[in-house]
Length: 171
Image (cartoon, rainbow, N blue to C red; front, side, top):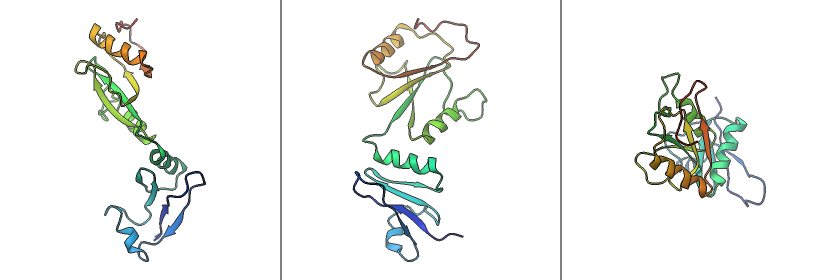
């Protein structure tokens, strides 16, 4: 079994990413600065915002970690709820959107729920709002919240079920 942990060291951000091989047995002081759950083969990637870990050199995993660490702030995708939208925490129902949340988080975004019936405005942290399969029309208060968000330059994706025949109140 491989006994080398890899670390991408912070370097001059105008240059390429720097890397070095570290053997945690030969460099225990470096290995101890990481979480106890880090094991042989774990890849620690350090950047401006801290350290991200992955268990694979798969290009997607390494690049996503670098993207997360090089961003000024976390990117947040907000899924609406309150009008019968698909539940992003539901991983057992084939019509749930648990996999949408997993894909969102696997591509370096944070997934959040926003209940339009409980908020006065879409949180400023939302970089994208997703309306995932609503089943009930949006009442005037929710329509106003969405209109204000879009008027200030917000981004929104509308995911409607193919057999949806109702009206959302947003027309």
